[in-house]
Length: 254
Image (cartoon, rainbow, N blue to C red):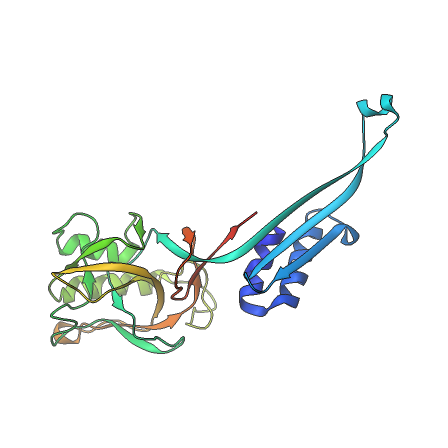
């Protein structure tokens, strides 16, 4: 617990704050300050927490050994997210996004990306507008991984898009109101979207995952744009190596 807590802080606030956080969590769980050792490896962006203490022995007393030293250690690090559930049925081609900036995630008119408006066909190939609405509202519950090939979904689907985003906005009832700079984990206004290659023969390849905070309700017809601000977020999913697009997961590496 201490290592995982420290790793989260290390990624956002640096080594000193991570060491303080890890030690605080360890002490909150019954480890005294003098028994804790916390070290940070900046090269691997990992944190190691270890503890040792003297404990009294039972049966070993007949061998004239009344005490022994026992210890435990764990290391945790931020890793790239390589597999997720709950992604939105949208795809974005990486364009060197800047955190906090507003981007179009689905277009409503024009040719889009080679005639593609931005929607993906997750689940069964050829699913209708109702399936798209459901996946956009609640996220697709299947597991999507880096390297997967996904069919693009044709059509503007203005009505289902507006309905789904409207529901997401209504489901965010957090107080204070979530913003792109401060939102609760798993807020409905956070769209987790696959970063994909440009479509080829109506298929894209998943390269990673990015998060966008919805800023408003899409319009109708050619104004059916989904717009969101690019944000960092912590996800619960499969971890591995490779480029990161703002999605991180924290795992025990030892």
